[in-house]
Image (cartoon, rainbow, N blue to C red; front, top):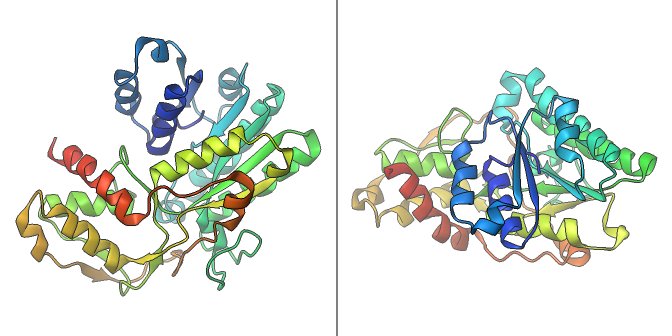
Length: 324
């Protein structure tokens, strides 16, 4: 599993170990943290810890990818450089990691004769598509280098299945949030960033008028989707991409209100804070909401947590992370 030390990867690793699986983690710790690996292993019994091997390496290194993939039945690819603004600021590194790195993962998986590659794609591939909810076969023009890399990944995964017979499934994540999500850095995701700002008494900035909407997806839903994508035996489910979300959207102003009100249990004065509105950012999609019918039908996917449910579980973790 690539990206094992990251937010999504560490949660997926934890679930796989609890299911009795043997897991090989692969990460270069550029955006992930060793503490995430330690946190998972500290919570596991000895027999589970013995079923985990960590390989430190970069997906831009084909030999390192081959070392990690050797002997694997499945590859779950979570490693990436996220963030639309980061990709606009540094398109070369984004392409090297998200596209060339992904191609290395595919080659290593092919050479290791793995059964299936399940990889993280993104809702950003919908670009300026006007149709809501967003359906897998109707995409628009991508709006950022990050989105372009994810669209290219989907094309190459499909080509590898048709050329080499290696099964692949792409999961288009929609705004994932949950525990172990890093609130720090200039490209931190909106939910942990706002939680940190509110608990520190700082300002929360909304880009645009606050009406921009997203389909926020709790980490438990993403973990479920990865396991279903790997374990569903039918070959008909492969060479496909699936929306992984809740099929519901919330505006950024609504999201801010939910987070602010949920944090008043930690600091009562947070209830009086209002957001600050900044200009729209280039590359951002205006509205995002998934049609999850395909994942429901073919994978058996069903969200267990919607936005309020996910925040109820995530806010205590975010709060502990921010108060030490």
